[in-house]
Length: 487
Image 1 (cartoon, rainbow, N blue to C red):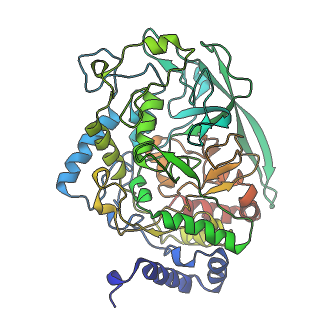
Image 2 (tube, rainbow, N blue to C red):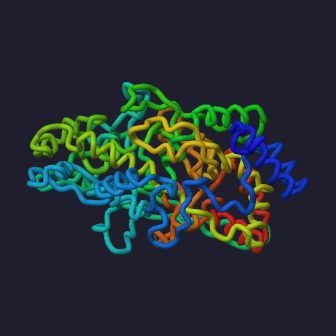
Image 3 (spheres, rainbow, N blue to C red):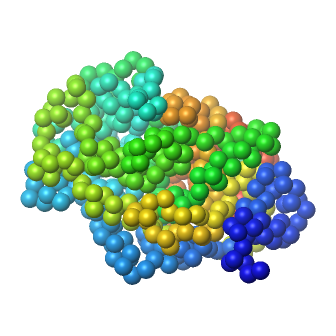
């Protein structure tokens, strides 16, 4: 029977057995206990996204279309890219196709946060408080739930803090950030230092926030491969949780169930740092509104609260006709995002990379960072491409919520996510972030200055894996990082 004609589950199992044979008995013992043997990646597999993979490095590595995209779809990709990266302007304007910015906002374009379709970073306040964050936002809520079971917004400042505004409207205020140093040591005696961020607000223009307000910082993640993540069947995400629960260990991921505005139903969450978004359409419409103040058919109402009178009185875009971004433009932007290609791995046969992959297995990191999937049908044909279907991909995530300990806790619930839980972030493209964005800030708020620091922040369900890393010597730690940066 030809490989291409085999059912996806059988193909995954064969790929897993081939890797296990290469890895030896130690690898077999690990993958069997982790319950992910059929999903492990071959150590020299370069194609992170199957036929969609692009072989790209450098500043534009996250900005290419799926390699197997057709000519007509590539034209649509370019159109979506133009609306993703160009700035929107304040209304009223002669540029009615791009007006409607604000009244409050944190960025003037999607690309303002996702620079080069890449990752944001915390602000560099060494240049003064005028350097307010763009690629980092602060979610706000108070105890309780909204009508759909999600977070309840702060009554004065809403669900997201906006530190910029159009003319005639006051910004909500400014964000301050300082770091506390956390000291630690590896078992071999090597010392390390971590940075724990502390956030605050100043110059609040609409009065105080609620006394019981909760805040959660969120860095803009890189965009490459998100359409392939959307094509992972919901049943696979649920299966991840079921298999982890069946093992009876500390790792017990949870599926988030969230409200999806485009489909008007509860769905399995897979995007966002707390898996609090189910679809790219919702994520994109929500970002247009929350980050740029631009209404859409998904989110037709501005976020002005009753206290913000100047916000309510500000002119609206599209000559006062909602929505400010029309459906075709919004769909083209979603299509662009969904067809951004993952970049191929670099140097997967390098001996240090191979050693690092074995150490990754020994530390049981794949218990949460599931290596591979076979994509199913794209959920919204008008918003994506069939080129993403039936691809063996290696994102290294289970898309589940995990308790990551008190050190990373934000204390803010988000649908079924509690204040200590975070979604397992995909690892593909990790090593290209410095090339694309000029920094290496990782985790949900960018506190980690590289992959090793990100590992050292792991706790809770991931405590045993971190302890394995703490026991590694300098050479082993370097190999682990080398592997992670090859993804």
